[in-house]
Image 1 (cartoon, chains in turn red, green):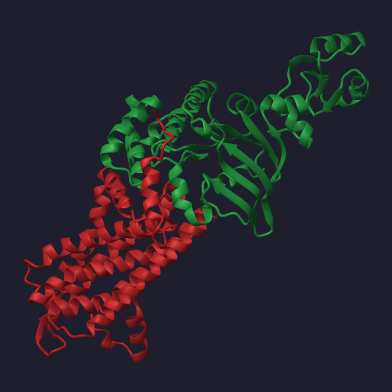
Image 2 (tube, each protein chain N blue to C red):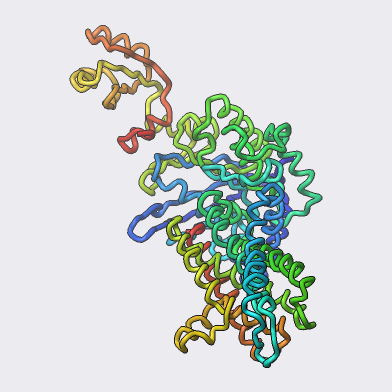
Length: 280
Length: 312
């Protein structure tokens, strides 16, 4: 029998779920989107994925070891000498996490939303909009984490991670990736055309160049500093740089809180937007 | 199954959907019983798809009542969707996945186990006559195959109600017949089918009972045969005199038939005895360029109810 008249497994699964609060928007199966992601990924273009990872590595080589020769050592926050490569490596790690998460949560999500139309199909199953939001953000986050792990695997042998706190850079990069994935998908869900999508790219480049990545923000006048410090990449760069250079205090929790808000906000807006787009 | 045969699985009362100022569905009432094949018939923009979306719990009603298997879609959306199989109008297959993966992955969205799905997917591929194509990407399948895959996907959670939105639109006649055959089999197994269509022959083939919708309202309800009996005559004679001349002969023809409809390209004459009427027309000295006697269809019902043809 193709179908049956007794309660099907799918119904039994969902009925167990229904007692929980929020069951009308979340079925607890965001992980199924990751499964789908891996299946689709198997046959996707690896070169595209790889190119996103290579970019920060190239910056590290060109600026850290090339231009770094001309610059010499800088001083860290505690007055100790730091090589230029060790100064920009944490920033590039944060950028790796950001790139991975943003590529997936913007362009890929845009295509799935408007051309693949896969969210519409997912929402006709017993998944809720928050499953889809969390699942897709999770998938983008994984790419961010993969990029940052790859980056760590390159910088650690080069001697750019100098103390044990540096290990925390990996969870920190994951947090950053989560934040960017979340906000990236939320923004994308409001965009309708390629032109609008290009604005995202247009915004990303200056953020990358001027968020304390290649030089401290103290070179700016006060008011520009304040703008930069409000941007997510600066928050990420500061967090990872502090960990990798071993300058750890409670103020780092401020950066963590910044990303937690970003994650929650992005997730919420994405859920609301998916509902508005596909369940109207 | 005894008591269940008459069980109402979908109940809509004064069901309404407004988008800002536009009323897509305007206070409709209907019931669907278990095992029934229920049709929503009407032209584009009649409110069929919107009604389907509300039943599928992916669109919230703005007025009236709606229950699916006794459950409230506003609060139990995912639970209701677990009962339903949905075959969307444009298939919407996952183009990044292979045919079998489309079924498997969709089953996973319902939380079904891999073990269960492994067997289920094979069963469904066979049902959809796609076993040979299991490893093809969705894009590489023909239109008919894609539609069958979409139907198989809709069955993966063993739904009690299968929702089909325009199931054969865009398919060639052969693919259509294969599809109808598959749907008959499902019906035989007791699956409740809810079908939208703007094809009359499809409604006559597949539906036990249907509602005719136009501009968000229900114009008529009943079995195809009952609707034809109520709103049309047994037979129809179609005559063409040429584009400008149809109007001219209309008054003369009106006296011969029970009722006539003058369309831009032809005149339809409603009667109990088609051949006799045709003879009378010729005897009256009228010589149509072409003529045709046929059974009355739902198309005629629609024309009678709305004064318009279905596919314009």
